[in-house]
Image (cartoon, rainbow over all chains, first blue to last red; front, side, top):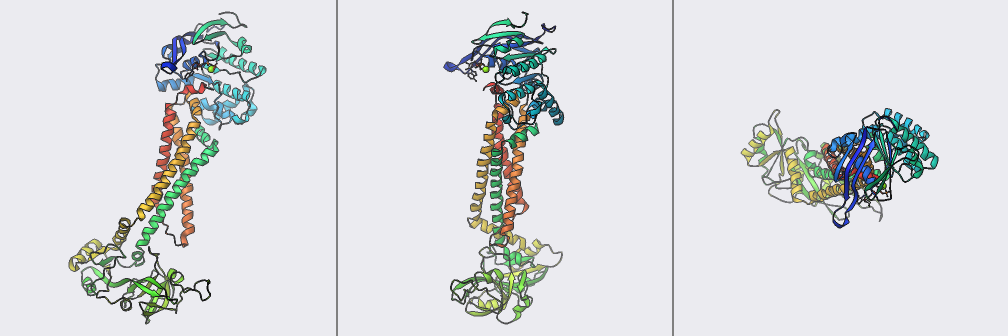
Length: 239
Length: 386
Ligand SMILES: Nc1ncnc2c1ncn2[C@@H]1O[C@H](COP(=O)(O)OP(=O)(O)OP(=O)(O)O)[C@@H](O)[C@H]1O
Ligand SMILES: [Mg+2]
């Protein structure tokens, strides 16, 4: 528990999302209520297809919900307007995508520096900072490699470094440790955990990996488009 | 983000080279075809260019272009000379006469008859002999391309190289003996017939018996004389058509453009280059964007605005456009340089470069715009799809 736990980072109320129309319609979210506190690391677990990716997409402001309200640090993402929302994402949200989505033509350091480029940080300074973050995730020596020259786990660490570099307030991760061995996975979770502990920040991590549950403050279990329950982490006391 | 855009483009080497190839090909084809077209068109009036001295050409009012021969009464020369503002006026005979080669074949030649006294209107450049040699009896000057080409004598040995016509050789023009006293260089003509120079009076003896043998009257205006005014005066007092040399060139070009299929032909080739350019470059560029859609999606999710993405794609288009244009125009210039001494007409004024630049810009913009639409409409949520 942290002393900022009372402040809300994310709040979802009655969030629904349906893909497609008519007979092919799939209701991915059926009225999700979920709060994430500032300073908290929340894990989102559940069977495949239950709506985890859809939910974090809505929270991160890259997908519009059909109904319900989503607030991120008090901002109503849906009614923010396209431009403001894009700018807000660039400044305040970090992403670790399920498929890494690194730019194949950029080196590891350049990939990590992309959020800084977007914010207009000069190239040299951005790459310099990217090197430091790569070192902190343990692959500083691969800064000049292209993604194709890196293993899956290394690529995933580049992706994580990219999500951290601009010190966003909210980080959403889709399966960040799926390609990592236990030791590396642990190390990555520790880094992410440290970030979450910083004031006014929050992490939402989708995972299947029960070995990482101990790093969570709380674990939200999803089923068929709804949050079934929210548990305290096995390694931590209930909030 | 400009740096990211350029790296993305160059990183995909095969596509990058494909797009550049398309644009290079398009600009090469457009530039080269237009240059040949312009080259051919300048050839149509090369006789006017070669005859540099006169300011004004006077001719029958029905004449439409330089090879349109409608001779005048020889007395017209004196009427033109009488017009105020005329410094001098000289007769010019221009006609197509048959030359008989030593093997019995006939070759049509473009014969110019120059004023006997002044020899005004002679060839722009003498290679052998002098223009004054035309004062000798039966003398003619032949252009070097004709002498080495269509007027060359077949080799005595079967299968051997033809022997070029030399100074001292004779040929028969309409059954009249003519002695070659000089070789000259002239601008290549459109029909590329050999060009033969002689004096006006001798030309009239070569020419078939006709009542009128004065083809053009060449006029030099007095210094400070307004050419259009002078033309009007000549027209008023003689009833003949008088036009400045530059306008005569242009009339000739217009005639060829209007009455031959040449412009359509070249226009099609240029259009083809344009379409092929759009097809190859546009298609590859579009494919490039589509294949990178997930990357653009990631950039979008991470906070890159549509305006920035637009700028990135335009920058990519501009980069490949500039390189493709440079290579294409460079290749076309090289082509022009290599074919400089050949039969091929090739002229590349800056207007052609500007037109090609506009065409390539258009191709790039179209390619970029269809790609940009996709990126603008892109849902960033695709990035979480594996
Ligand atoms: N773009 C889409 N169009 C139509 N249906 C979709 C789309 N994206 C997701 N779905 C459907 O919505 C439901 C929830 O998908 P979602 O990707 O959120 O699941 P998930 O919990 O992330 O699954 P996984 O653990 O396999 O990644 C699924 O039934 C899926 O088939
Ligand atoms: Mg998922």
